[in-house]
Image (cartoon, rainbow, N blue to C red; front, side, top):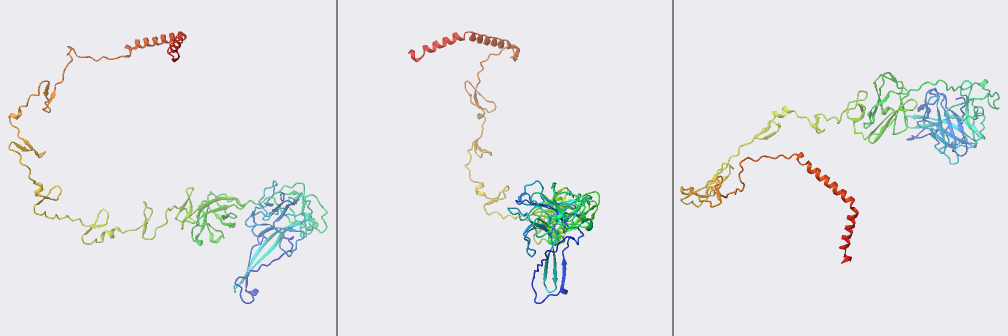
Length: 568
């Protein structure tokens, strides 16, 4: 940029494992970080500044004149007082950017933490002074801090931090400015204007480039007034020409609309971690500019020029991106468009080792089958070791048994193989019974030995006219012909032919009628007359009671008074 002032060059040298002896330039290999110039980008500009002395209205707006997005990593926004010494550190570091992104031809607004206006802020100052961070006299400087490393074969590492001023705006009595400081009344907004060709101009002259206008809308530009007399010290615009920053017809940014996260391999060895994305659309997708980031840090991984066919997958090795994936706790992976808009977000938690978080039929599941670059497959358990197989019922790994070889093995003497289980068992042998002792015999039912003496215990012999009942083992009298004649039961009793016992004769008092009894059927029609009679009677009694209620009440009171204790 033509207007960059040669203000400050700092060299920070870090010596690690410092060697003995000098290091010559021929021994060094230099690695330099990319700068906006090496990326062929127009420099960012400070487009608006508002100061009020209290902080409630303090704002700084940055404009990106490029059609593509710019990552603000490495940029700093600094405030310098009117007495700023060029050999010292900046008075106040307003904002140190990390991974913020400004879209093509876009704006980025930073304000005081106590800002109470209507402008939507993108961020607040890192240091918001209580009485305000921007004084009535001072400067704001946008700095890009590029870093380079010098490596020596003898172990010396030299890290050089070189701040480069990208834009500088001074107002009032500021000591740092471009050509001439502009004026600030502390009420309005210092802002750049847009000429008749819709071009934002920058002549490296703060007085000519930034003025206070009535219109103070942020995230847009006001029209420049005609001014043919630039302030002394400035240069005529027509003679010098303009740094043209045209916001017209910006190139469309990649929205990455059909790109989705498909599989995450987090709890793996660091060199094996991966994120798989997929083009879910029906047309070819250019993923250049699309980005990946995680919950672990602010680093963003942008995709290069890569085209994905419909349904094609693309695998990102984490070791090549600088990103960090959470392994054992809760993690999140974000997929962003080129403008930084979130397209997809996937959360996972407590992933087992050697597993992946896979999208299967629109559901995220833990799978032990890692398929980077291929269609996801679900595997509920980790693969078993060689020689083992998974038991479907228990989910455990069981050793694979060669049944044929097992069946051929000899079980040994006195053993045989069970045809049902395939296991060896003792050959069943019939047990030989030990002969019973003398004076005993074997019970055929129980197979036990029993004493003959107990079995044939001496019973008292039955009498000559008796026999032993085999059921009760008792003696019973042998019936004779005379015993058959049963005695008379007596008057009023008879012998039951079933039990042969005597019983009382039932008395019969009913007179036998000359005809058979008939069943009488009761019908409802036979009683309706009684119901009518009863209803009419109740109505009559009720009516009489109503008509004579006073008389009945008087009689009742007389009776009560008669039998009252007071009259006794």
